[in-house]
Amino acid sequence: MRSVAVFCGTSPGADPAYMAAARAMGAAIAGRGLALVYGGAKIGLMGAVADAALAAGGEVFGVLPVALMDREGAHEGLTKLEITPSMHERKARIAELADGFVALPGGVGTMEEIFEIWTWGQLGFHAKPAGFLNVLGYFDHLRAFVDHAVGEAFLKAPHRDMLVFKSESGEMLDALAAYKAPVTEKWIGRPEL
Ligand code: AMP
Image 1 (cartoon, rainbow, N blue to C red):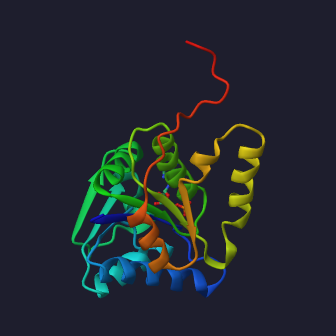
Image 2 (image 1 turned 180 degrees about the horizontal axis):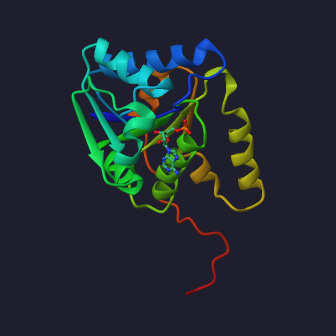
């Protein structure tokens, strides 16, 4: 693994622990000699993870859609900032650049981005890991919901188990590096085609 994408909130969150966790993740990525790939903004947890990786001497690649340059604030101090014509191109570029993906606490933008990566892995379109950094138990309910989806036979256990849940950034990076993609087909109860 040479690069890690971090998806996280454009907001700082209610507790200072969220910003602290973003800074710790940025420092841990750079400390291991990994490149950080992220959405290119300078606000909220997004700005914090990038600033910490840069401060630790790491390489940081940002990918921001043109429509959000003013609203999310293009980070001007990055190793490289790519401006894409659309959100779809931003996500495709991040998916291409990174070898592993982590969601830190965030809003629906964060959820959308990490779920897309997970679903592509489930379909076998890539074999890269995806994890949730569970700061202050922020993702506990999401994890319970994913278990519910398995219980209700809409999701297979090996596909649930693709997701890495850790609360500390070093443990998260270890787990991403050790990840092996499942070979299980996604569909449950599909008739012969
Ligand atoms: P949020 O977690 O909502 O604060 O947003 C985090 C990041 O997700 C920001 O960089 C947003 O630009 C991005 N984002 C917001 N909406 C979407 C979407 N529909 N698809 C992909 N990314 C999004």
